Length: 630
Image (tube, rainbow, N blue to C red; front, top):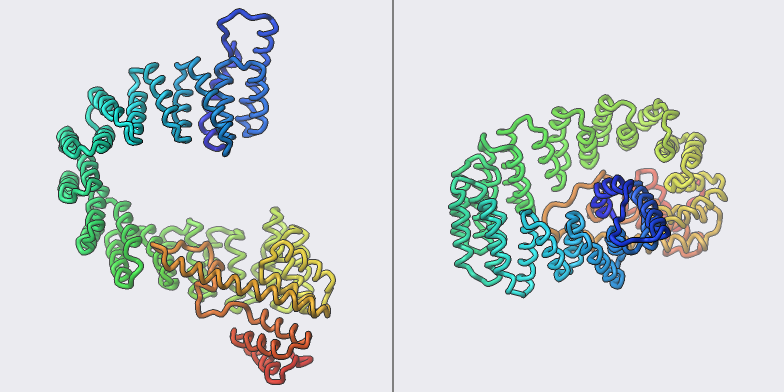
């Protein structure tokens, strides 16, 4: 429907003006009742236009239908009603047929309407109704014989017919294109169309003759030489293609498009050495525009980044580009993106430090720098980068919230809490943003063992947004950990799992709440569901990773480091320490000691911290839960 909106806006403005005067001209005499009915239809149609301009498409359709039923003979209403049927037909073939019938009925009554003729041609092309397109194009061509674009459309329509197998239209298409050349002169566009027509008959001689004529008409134009070269390349005549690419580069040695086409030609011919030499030559050229150099780099990355030798050459290209175009933030940023994609996060951060120094007012530069540093494991550097960015964008939560998270991950919980506590949270008017802010603060409070503050922050988060499932999950888990408000914890956990039944973190929380309430059998069922879902997720991640390995080109940069999956960290075992520790405890309480030890062992395999490690080792050693253990 968006395309319909764009197509109609200007038309509807004009119609709204025209509707003030007699909108629907009738040739025949009519009664007063007929005139009144048509006036009412005109008024309703104006209301329909208004509804459309307000993007109320349902109302537009209803009003249009009423106007049409009042005056079904008016060609404008017939056209619009047919058009509306097409735009809302979906897969209803009967509606499509009816829509085109109505559009042609209306258009034949007012063939001088240039807009409607074009609209009909576009719609017939969209629906691949080539017979209908031919009818519409021929009506327009008879109505507007002096308009070049109308004649061009007719020629294109004839060409489509010829390409679909009706070769009788081939010469008609060529005649129209030749006639247009007599009017406007030779051009690559018209020559390309003529060549397509010659190709229908496999007339290679005529194609080469046409290319020669095109070049003779503009012998000093590098763009014409490029166009001729591309056509020769498509005909699999590489020697001729290279001749014209060389000619284009001689005509304009600083033309980035010509140089890029020539270099890519060597690439497609499998001559990687020449391609690399051409790329280096282009990048070193002080006359070549910067944008063209960047195109070379991007093309080179897409071609050669998969192998280690290619990566070394890419590094060399970037270093060369930086030597020639020092001070260009775009180069450093592009290099950083490439390094990040290839797993070199620390090196990417180094390049991004140059970027933020050159463009400190670009918000995403700071965020990308912090992301690269965090991915490299340097959380303190990531927090510092966001702190510097906050000086440029003061009181911007886009910087403050992740800075607090990174401060905490870097081991400085008190500084993270101070950062959020010093923020004027009363200024946060958006409920979702306030809820996220309080959730972060609650996480930090609980980690700092300020449990009452944590629970209050979580409840504030849920007051601001009762559908903040992350806050709901966290507070439910921490209620369970502290044996506090277990009924409320169960209520929250149930809601969260109902919302995301496949989320293993949420399922684990629910199982742990049930365990704390003493519902061991129900807890066992939930933890089994959690582990089963985890194994399924892990198998899907492995498949996705395999597909990604086979894909061409570098992977896209994730929005933030939290999007890294287990598949991207193959040394990391799926599932958390807590999940398997919980599973072991639950199975122990259900009397299955062997399974409990199996799960505790899996928890230990996931390398818990020193305190948890000792606690789990004791459970494995004694094959039981150690009461009152820390």
